[in-house]
Amino acid sequence: MKILAKDLKKETKVKAETIDDLWNLSKIISEGDIIGTKTVRTVETTDKKEKRPMYLKISIESVEFDEVTESLRLKGKILEGPDDISFGYHSFRIQTNDIISITKQWKNYEIDKLEKCTKIVKTTILILVLDERKADFGEVMATQVNMLGTIEAENKGKMFDTHENNKYYSEIIKALEEYSKRYDKIIIAGPGFTKENITKLIEKNTSLNNKCVMGISSVTGETGIYEVIKRGFVDLIAKSSEISRETKEIEKFLEALGKDSHLVTYGISEVKKAATMSAIDKVIVSDSIIKNEEIQNIVNAVENTAGKVEVIGSTHEAGEKLIGLGGIICFLRYRLE
Image (cartoon, rainbow, N blue to C red; front, side, top):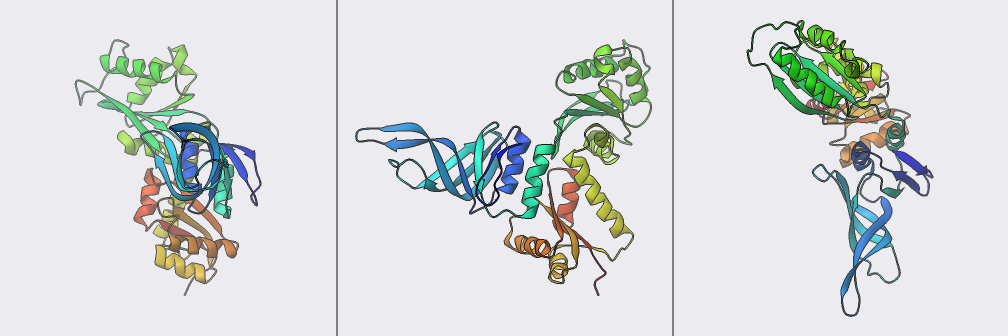
């Protein structure tokens, strides 16, 4: 994300540079915000209808991130535009590299999220988790993991040697060579000795050797990829990785909960009670419920008492754990009676 002009009291202009930026904007922009951008609108003349490019500002009524078209859809009532257009409703379809202006009552967590988007290191990371039976490939994004594919061994259950003519190994090396064109770093992990065998072959491949690092995972599949992230290997490559940081936040809470700490609580009713007592040091909310009115009241109460608010994604394993806890958790300043 690139901030082109920042005036939180009037108008802030931003440029979404990636799909992740569009997704993050969908969590920042809310109903009632005023958004301006260049668009195309059908205008009726005396004898025909024509599509005309123009700059409009609308008051937002709905926000939707469209995964299929990889765009942000914003709909609302037109507030500003050319004098010769009929003011009604309009929809923006925001894509990467589009510039928009945002006018709103900014909350602290929204400002933090906007600023974090500008600091994310654009390091592209691939994780390979494998054993003697199968190899799984996953792409690490700022807010989620995309599973890319699996290679399965023909003779499942048998340990393979490290010979270059081994078909299973050869297919993995070939896939890594293709992926290496798209990714800056590749983390290789998994149970057993297969990862060491593949690493020995990679050492002989100059196009891969400089990009690959060893990780640790006790299983394969998507669970194995998230284990690599939990263990901090992604952080070694991209210190500002959102998914790794968010995972650590949830693990820290679960560890405290497991120790029966009285300085954490979860669920809307319990967190709301803590907020009314000004007892919250930090509240963590799932992006799937952040725009709920009751949640917004809690957020306002926490920010008004100098507490911290963090919103994390719901599309990765840690985010799913948060949803399982009611979508909201908090760390307390003191023990509640």
